[in-house]
Length: 218
Image 1 (cartoon, rainbow, N blue to C red):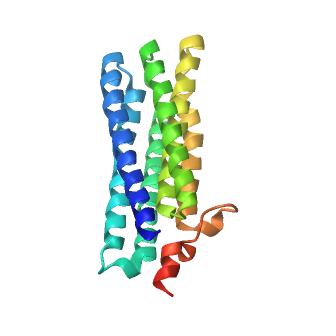
Image 2 (tube, rainbow, N blue to C red):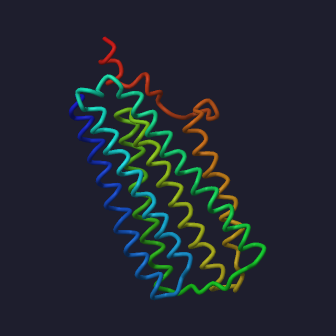
């Protein structure tokens, strides 16, 4: 069971890295061709998300090493906090960019190809987020749950850009900065809940109750 859980976590980590990397490359190309800063920024977020995938794999390999196996719960907890900090930093970055764009609005340039790419990104990110959260819950892995939450946050970011693009194309009104600011606050809240679980009413499986932790203390 322990080996199966470890393989599932590592497999999820590799899937996380591959999906975000492909989305990033795809979005960078289309962002440059359509001159869309929003899609290019979304691509950068996908690249930073790949860091979480590497953290998942590294933490799992370390916790499975005979020298570190008894510290599995601590390793997972530290990794979860690191991922949470990444979530918070992304949120803060979006807050800063949103405020700057509200004070000094920039011209946006959306196109139909850009909207199609945003829709594809949303579907891919939502599917990945659902998989990570469901898998994390089933094997009681806070690391996967945190990565799933991070990916779901990115899904909302892409949805924000999509809504803003549609509104701009139809009414020529740029609302991206205001919606992004609201979502950024939600993103920061989610990150804080992973560091301080008591802030959330429904969150996460305690690592102390994970199957592997129990095995190590029997």
